[in-house]
Image 1: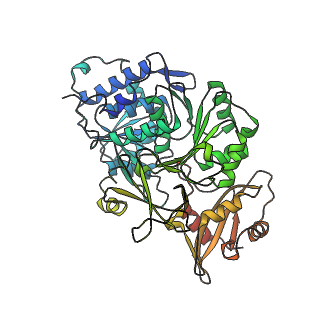
Image 2: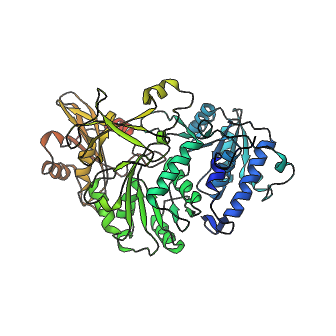
Image 3: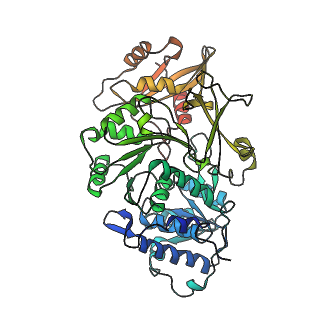
Length: 510
């Protein structure tokens, strides 16, 4: 029996766009919906003709280019499971992903073929270079039309193995089903009010759940995405946004800090731009306010999510940004969010009680691939225990306090690094900041702040400590401050706090 279009995620995503309408734009390339559908159908047929069986994992080693979109959708369309490699994949990560996923085939962008072949020399995996795939006809040919596509059970069958960022340890592969993505995509479209007129500038990696969600939502509505394979020259990205008539832009905290500090974002106006999305970590409240002021005519959506929940869990309506500054909003239409204390009871709204955010709904994934122990730890009774601590105001809006494992215990006090980071980020000469706890004989844990100054900024350790002394109680003032050129981040732009703890152990304190 063939899968229905509603069950098959790839066909569902591609069902709205007009044949002649642009779906993907990259440099001088324009891939229309008609062309994209034809290429996806042809490649999916090739997978089946080569004998791949439903559920097999297919690797995808590729930047943000049209080849990624075609391979990703074709893999899913054929009833296979796409396994994207994160940007910056090295030999160790390459091996980890291939072996963990149990894949026997990976499609590789031409620029990565040479070293991928070297890395795969002793691995039982077939590499299909981009050039060999590009030689296929633009429409199904040969025996492809006679092939029977497998029936998809959207509740059970995996569309993607999405490797987490690994900011706190070894990366884990999240099992994402067809229905997970359909549900989350529909909810995001609903609150973003996306239409076929929307066109997003996509600088986030497509291998990252946030980047993938931008692709999903715009394809589903018949809109388009402009792919950017590098954010090395952010001013050029802004220029292309204006030239292409982009209606939207999405970024993580580091993305917006770069745009605010290193580009002309606040001085530019984009006639077509109507929304900005921010997720992938907490942007300090003062920076959110600065971003909103930089583009006053553009709606800013502050959102919260996890890979384990497909992409999004909550959002804050732009109209409530001023009154609920610092909030991640409330759950999506299909998502239930609870904030539970250690005894499992909900926190009291409007109080100072803090609990863990626990999520349930059809966007919550099935857990971690071949890791029953980790799945049992975070997925219990059909609910995702996020590890994020929050409080709830009287109106039911959530405010993240911090990650449970990031709290600093100093001199008997439990301190949120996020609160200290927000204070330091208000200094006009600060570009980035991250705060961690480091072992200390006197304090138990000392507060260590790593600060990246703005260009031409006048910062030193004593000035920053004095700045904090004026704004924070004594027990929350950093004992040590490090002025650094940059913060270590993973491939998705999240700060690697464990690396900072290791650095603090090697560097003398001030």
